[in-house]
Image 1 (cartoon, helix red, strand yellow):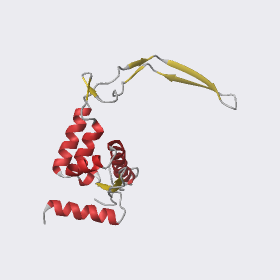
Image 2 (tube, rainbow, N blue to C red):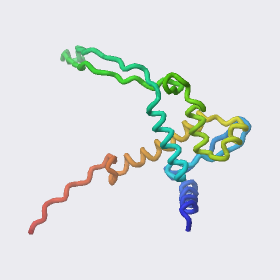
Image 3 (tube, rainbow, N blue to C red):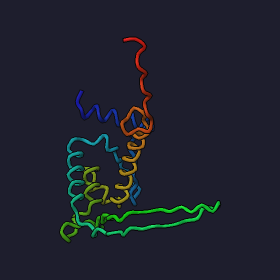
Image 4 (cartoon, rainbow, N blue to C red):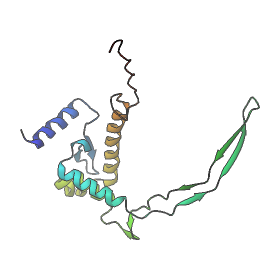
Length: 174
């Protein structure tokens, strides 16, 4: 069985059982529906293009960092207790300038269009012609990614999971 067929079957099973790995449908202005696959089921070429795009975006222009001075605050609790809070001086990293730019030049096509092209492949032109919103697709893809992350974070067997495995007691005899 080919890997593409296996991946397709896994995606269909996830959709059928409304799994955290399911795909979603996006509707265009013209009422045409397109399937947005869960990123866990991206093909090798999609994954490569998606990772390269994110690597590129991670190097886009940012707003300047801001220096925050040291702060001390006092507050009085209802019982009269005074609470002092100290926040040390720190730097707040500048956020990316939107729309994305590289050395002051706009990224073209925009990030959202590039993501839609990667996700939809040869169906992108039909999506665009039917009035599809690349920004809506990007938001949907982020929601699908959050679903996977949420599942991993909730899994006690996952290193990122909230559960902690109990320590195994020492054996009675050696």
